[in-house]
Image (cartoon, rainbow over the protein chains, first blue to last red):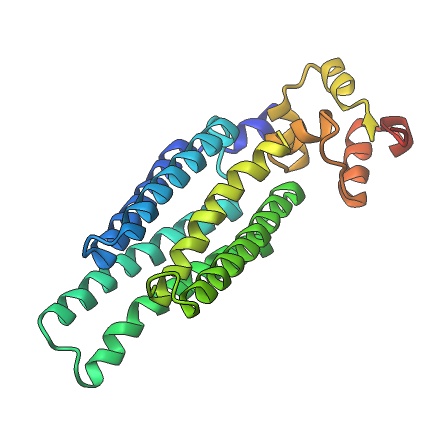
Length: 197
Length: 64
């Protein structure tokens, strides 16, 4: 019985969480760099992302800090971190190409879509996590948070779109939808987990 | 739904983490079950009943 308990070596959950938050932070500053040009949504987005990352980190640390990382979560962290790292690298590369004026031809399509492939991989790792997680409450928390993120992102995007059509809001490029979804998902994760505490 | 998980766990001198490991769930799930914030699925309820060697209705009480 004791051997069974000692069998699972406690993996460094805290390190994994810190790395995840670091990647989110990098993603936030990337969004800032890209949107840049001193537009106010840039700063709101950056602050919201930092806040969401901090909220996620504190909740995760309190909930899972002393526990071994579950296999499904480990798989997710590896897949998600790999995908987000690839995303940041490909995005930086694409921005460099754009700045150098090399994206006029066919290369433009490839450069613009390459980071998206990494983003698809990131979403896929999240979907696989839900499928592989054997803990029903964790699964439920993830799905509930995804639904919150879905509803909030669609509502915000629609509201902004209609305001824009009425000339009441500046134009916003559609790629901001994914970061907004990520921020709301992070916040929802914290809130939903807290509700089941 | 009320349950006797905390009592049964205390009788065996298990921590929430010990019980979590025996049921292959997270400690958070044990906590949510004990505080009545989350009701387990039928498979998990059977697993808990088997672990403690008691029928489900001796562990979970269907009342508000």
